[in-house]
Image 1 (tube, rainbow, N blue to C red):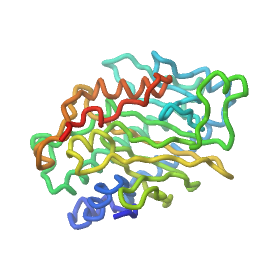
Image 2 (cartoon, rainbow, N blue to C red):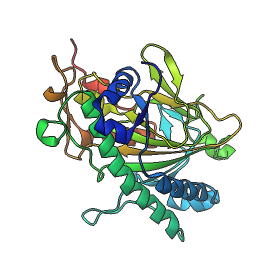
Image 3 (cartoon, helix red, strand yellow):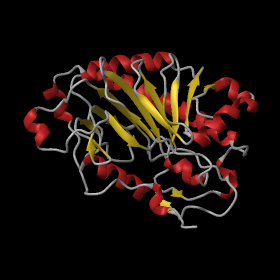
Image 4 (tube, helix red, strand yellow):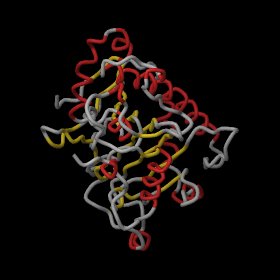
Length: 317
C-alpha cells in the first residue's frame, strides 16, 4: 500500500472495515490523512495566529529564543541528522499548575496564546481518538486494561513551522553554526506515538515507502496528516512503522505546518507489547524519559553523532 489513504474519522470509528487501508499504510510508510475530524474552526484560528507570529520582526521573535535549559519557544537553527534545517519554529506545551511552566509566549500577543491553547486541547482529543483507530486496525481491544497504552497530553507538544525561501540567518550567524543541508527538513522519524500534522497547500512533505521509495504526502484541504512515531513501532514490535519523512526545499512559496506530537506518559516504558504483536520481542526495554531527552538534546546542538534511534535498542536475531 504505497498511497496515503484518506480516513473518515467518524466513519472509521463505526465501521472496522474502513480501517483496512489504514492498516496497510501503517505497515508500509506510516502515514494516512484524517478527514471529518470536526475542528476546522480551531485550525483556522491557529493558522492565522501562526502567520501573525512568524511575521514579527526577527529581533522580536528572538526575545523568546529557545535554549539548552528552556526547550520551548522560538528557534531558527535546529538540527536534524546533524544538518541545519531551513526553517523557523515555535514550540509550546499545555501549561500545568503541578510543574514549572517553560513556555515562552511573545509579549502583547494574548490572542496568539489563546488560539494555541485552544488548538492544543482540541488536537489532544483528536489524537487519542486517532490512536484508538490505530489499535483497532491491529484488531485488538482498546483500553489501558488490555495493554494498549494511551498517550498523554501532559508530555505532548505543538510546534509551529515556517519554511522560508532563504536562510533566516545572516551571513555571520550562519557561519557560526552548522551549515544548511540539501533539505528544508532532513529525513527523520518522530519519537512519540503519533503526530497530527496540519500542512498548508504548498506541498513538499515526503514519506519513505518500503516498496516505492520517497512518495509525496500531497496536501488535501480539510484533512489532518497522521504519521506514526518510534514508540508505536516499538510497541507493535515492527508491525507498524515509524514514518520516515522529510520536507524538500521550497522553490516559490514559503510553507507553514503545525505538528502536534502525541507522546507517551513520562514514566512509560517502551518495549514490545504482547497484546499488540506476536513473535519474539525485537527491542529491549527503555524509558520514554531517557529517549526523548536524547532526541531533544541533539536537536539543539551537534553532539558529534546522529541522534538516538530505536535501532539502538534492537535485539540482534
